[in-house]
Image 1: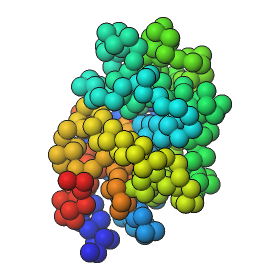
Image 2 (image 1 turned 90 degrees about the vertical axis):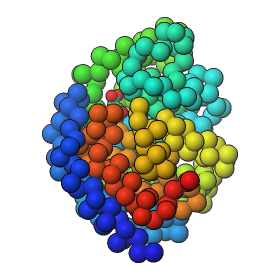
Image 3 (image 1 turned 30 degrees about the horizontal axis):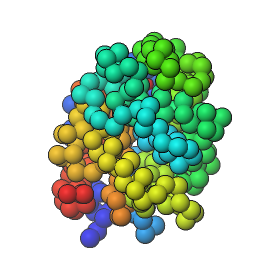
Image 4 (image 1 turned 120 degrees about the vertical axis):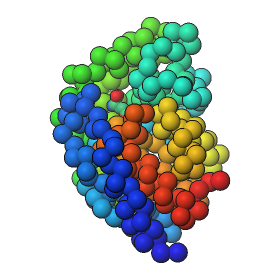
Length: 302
Ligand code: GLU
């Protein structure tokens, strides 16, 4: 199969959809992104890397970082599953409503509330949660320049009333180990990391390799990698994970910066990016490209 040609076709299929989306601006520093930017990258477990369009342009990874915080928390210490669930929430990513009836235990690690708990755990385990994510991404992507965009992180903090409310609410149930301000600082700093489709596709390969890192060392057991992929499939793409599974058929994590990282276990990873989002918060172009690619190639878990 000519993978490069398939990527180009998927890219071409996605382009016309870009005009139907909207760039996220609730974090003001994200609002300046170009809605017509679009890139798509593929990395395989055999070491091939291909890309089309703006695949080497840096963007704000936002919630794509949450899959790395979860992987590192699970790799570094005991499980976090008594503090966060693994069911789809059926509510927006930044919703507060379930936390009260569910006693401060967020539904899953990929909504904001759950990611705050995982960041807290990683902060306890490493002393530097955002730094741990950054170092991991640098090592796996081979890009030593990959870093947090401090302007985006500051913009998130300044407009982060909802995340602060979530974090304080979780703390009121005794489900945070560190001060709210410290946890939020690390949460914003890992969300505000900038990376390209190329970087993220390479960084996510450990999930396609069933837990094995670029250097051959094991980050997670095969079973843990399977479980992260399972939670990505059911909870990784906001309140549209069912639609994403239907159209793309892969575990994936999206972010409001417009990136989606998808895993083809045993084969590779795909990362698509376009800042124009649909109503659920997923990049319209990224979903369209992944849909086109997996439909044409059969690269799906189903
Ligand atoms: N940092 C963003 C927030 O907390 C992440 C949102 C996202 O990408 O889903 O709102």
